[in-house]
Length: 398
Picture (cartoon, rainbow, N blue to C red):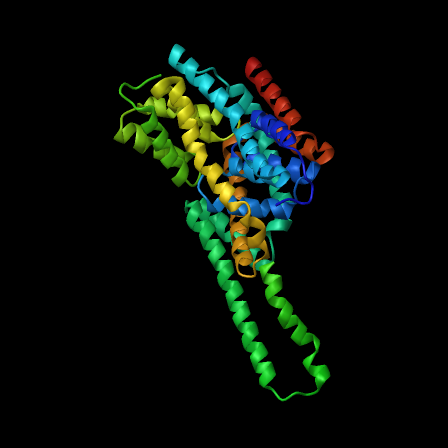
């Protein structure tokens, strides 16, 4: 699936390697950067295609931004682009996280990076807000999808899980579509049963509007641990996990601390922190935990295990995206899913803003970042570099 622009595997590799280095701020920020650069600047895809890919990515387990890298890579360079795009997006975070794990095991701590995060997060917040505004046209198909966005956003803010909201929104739109089709069919039947008032009356505008209506709505080493058992545990997590890094924390708490005792509570928190600090997907936490449990071999197999299901799921579902959009029954479900995905993105900057904009300096950085985006629309790498420099400068003098 693509907007008609074919590219090379090397082009996909270069882009996602660079993105993997600068992609701070979590999945919403990663997807926001992809939207700015690939739909807006490079024209690899359109907003509608990107929103449909995001909707399908929300329907399967795994890290959404990594799966979006796979979808966009496939749209640009076929199935090889899918695997290369996903691998290159994951690689920088994996290398950095395992390096942090090595330092953690060797020295008992990880290098501090609070200054970088302090400066980068306000700029990422501005990028997320810009992306949401840009995607609204593709995700909102009418009053019913706008209402769904509000309902899902409030429900998510109240603590309702992502999966019931996503599937529920899709089913609501499907039911609305079915009801409209049923009413339209009933109206047509009644019209056909009426005595004809002349050929012109039967071909009038009322009959044409009834036919159009449904289309308008549809549009280091724990002793005795087998590395292959470690691989299978992470494979299970990757195949079942929906949601955020907090859900990953819950899975790892159960599997590695409570049931197997491979990690201590402190080691688990440090592993999650390393995944949050580094750019790219938070699932890179697997490499940190794998290294702490079983060294280099454990790090590699843990990373392979947690990401492999996503590669397989996206390989299976990517060809279905355009078919879902063309289907008269699946398209309304996809519209509902897309509206829910946009609503979940709306919740992110609200929560992130409450957490990040906790002082005058971060508020100023957010305003400056938003102004730069509106006025100059620069490459995201420059924004990340500027934010990191600003954060380091502030912590140096604070």
